[in-house]
Length: 159
Image (tube, rainbow, N blue to C red; front, side, top):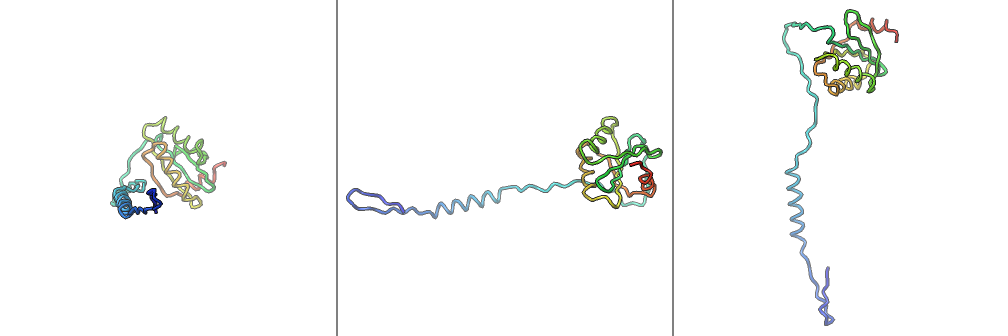
């Protein structure tokens, strides 16, 4: 409470009514809550193939494709020529997979990346690999099942 001294020894009490201030505060809080736009969750767009029985194939130059095989312990094996694969080893660092993909983007107009994962690889590795596609600007990539010939190729690799 606030007191006012009138000089004659009498004190007059003043009372400030806070009800309108509280009403105003609640009106402002309500206004800002209702007019605020919440951030929308960001999702990655994945285009799925048509559910038709047609087995249409498209011929692509071998030089445009790179095959990535995700393995255990955050290892990535990759090769470019499917007929004569010269398998290489890299990892998820900036000087690893990102450098490989950026070199491919610099040399080829629209590169195509085929991603295969062994059972021992982690789901995180697949997500990181798809993130690298977005970072490096590779628009065409496919997630494909690993084949027995790929597993044989990995067994013969010198790494």
